[in-house]
Image (cartoon, rainbow, N blue to C red; front, side):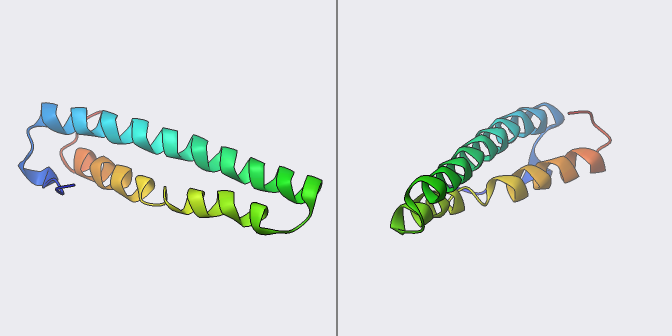
Length: 83
């Protein structure tokens, strides 16, 4: 996916991008929470094994959602806009 240059976006485009990234961030946070819950449940029910670490590996894939959202938030704050 092509990386957007946030400084070249208009205020309206930046706010739309912020909304998209916020939804992505919240979805990723929910999925990571679910995966951690599955890992804890698996550890309690089945003990330690490969099934314990599999959900955590999937959760690792969502690690870039927060930095992307923070990048947009920083640009919005630099322009003195509201989310």
